[in-house]
Image 1: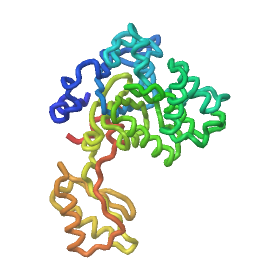
Image 2 (image 1 turned 30 degrees about the vertical axis):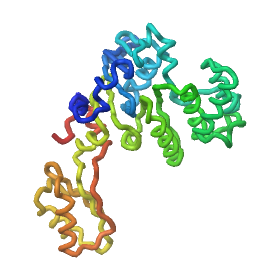
Image 3 (image 1 turned 60 degrees about the horizontal axis):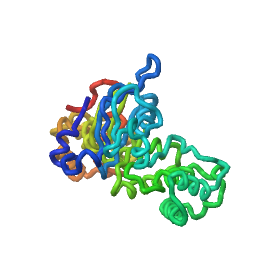
Image 4 (image 1 turned 180 degrees about the vertical axis):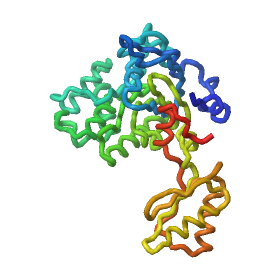
Length: 337
């Protein structure tokens, strides 16, 4: 397993658990769930502290949603323990669940209700009495920008607005913990951006856990990523640390013009010191560094200037999460040392 959390705790106070004590963290210890002969979740352990947006990432069938359901008390673990801000999810379920806002996968709701009536229903379930109930409903409608659809039946709403209604019900009681299962799955780019902005805003004073199989979600919104495969944690890193494991970390890509002499440019790039490989097709060439990549951008841009090459574009890559994800989850060592 790739685990950089211990070293990160030294450099980042957000990961120093002594600053906040056990009662302000989520603790998962040796959590296991079996269905017959299937180990859906196989002895996972991790901690999450306030201010983190933890991406819980893995391929379909890895055990993500099962883990989310155990964290929220919807299904019991076969073994292991979950503590939500000091409350055990099995022995003190109600106390723990009061501190959680949960958006299940697919955003289930009562389709025949309007958005306003559904949120009022959730507020009543949460124990709020008038006039606070009405105030809570107004507050989340404003926070999720639902003013234009509050009187529409939920079944008539777009996926984006259904997600917003789902997020509104999850935060209506101002929980300290938000657990969101596939919050942007199926949304168009504009809707994804809107939901991610809402999540970032909500994370300032909360613990946020997002279960997802969408790689862009990690770099777009998460401060930390746990990758699970076959029910086990195989990586616990920041998005930047994951990108740094990519063979394309710090690689430089050139987009050539139609008149560019591709073969001559390819030959000159291969002569640069610190270059491991130049790859690409047609009018795009990517220069991969042989080690850290430090100085490669300067070397390539210097060569471009010296040779007077005309380019359509040039940029340096941070790293490709998809290749790191495939390598980690497949157990194949394609990542850089």
